[in-house]
Image (cartoon, rainbow, N blue to C red; front, side, top):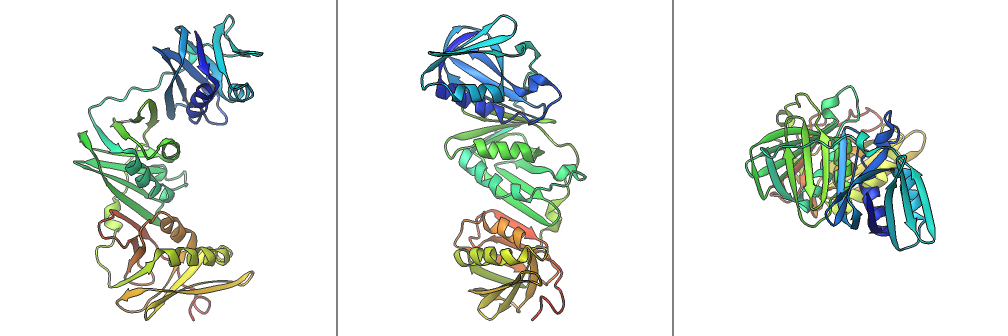
Amino acid sequence: MKASISKKHLLDGIRTAAHAIRGRTALPILSHVLIASEGNSLRFSATDHQIGISTTVPAQVLEEGELALPASFAAEVISSLPEADVILESTEGNQVRVSCPPSEFQIVSLSPSEFPGLPEVPDTTWFEIEAKQLRTGLRRTEFACSVDELRAILLGVLFVYSGDTLKCVATDTHRLAVDTRMVKAGEGEARAVVPSRAINELSRLLTDEGDVRVHISERQVMFTLGTLTLTATLIEGQYPNYERVIPTESDKRIVVPTALFLPAVRRAEIVARADLSRAVLKTSGEKVSIRARSGTVGQAYEEVEAVREGDDIEIAFNAGFLLDVLNVIDSEGVQMDMDGPLSPTVVRPADADDGYLCVVMPMQLQEGLDQV
């Protein structure tokens, strides 16, 4: 293969595809990016057998074919070149000549025939959704994914596609995040757990423009945005019945201004992290206090205004968990529905039709320390 391509496009193609590459791999070819000619463009692909990323960029193809480049080394070489067009050319002995006068490199590579193909995902079950909508749905749920390797099914985001809606669900058993979005078009229905690593890469690649087409098969999922494609192997197993842990009724509710509550919890977390991240919320009239204390670092106390329904309550939470959900709520107000100090609390935007909620399990109050 031989092609002429701008330095920017070449570097973008390699760096985008290379996000599919793990730091260490038993197969040397999996540290490479495959570059293949496609008409007046080049397609860059990489995979670690769990996820695969490919993207197409414009180029002048002088000789059709394909070649492989060691991703990390090639990116470092190309980033050092002048801002000009670069000539890529495969030569004998699985080497690649990279020319950008006055510079020229001869890079030792591997045969492109060793590169594993990215999986084909049939289009029997698919849907289209605005990229901005999907990006928001993932941002509001992925933080709740488990990191416990012993519960593999929780190491990703559950996609529940049915009719004209997509639900994104994540839980680590201490909190549960559910986001509901409308899709633009689709066919079939599916429940699929997309691994966290694929979700993280997808979130990074998504922009606020355009639509994403999602294909889901029994074992694979494919996301396509323009010329960019990400495929991933789904996590197999039965996802827990998340709906039964969402409280349907509560006798206490507080609504607090996000702009006041979020920074107050953030300040309390500085102290709380020295005591299992415990922060205590206590309502009193039209106020809610946020308190954290530690025998080693001190204490923090703050009050913010609140609208309360039901009796006063004192309840403890992991401050980090509260921050995670508060950071993804974009509305002016935060609503918290609860029954008692040990019952799950539902945190959601004060906007009733937002389609988002997060269930947070409280922590045990420490008698004589938390209670005042």
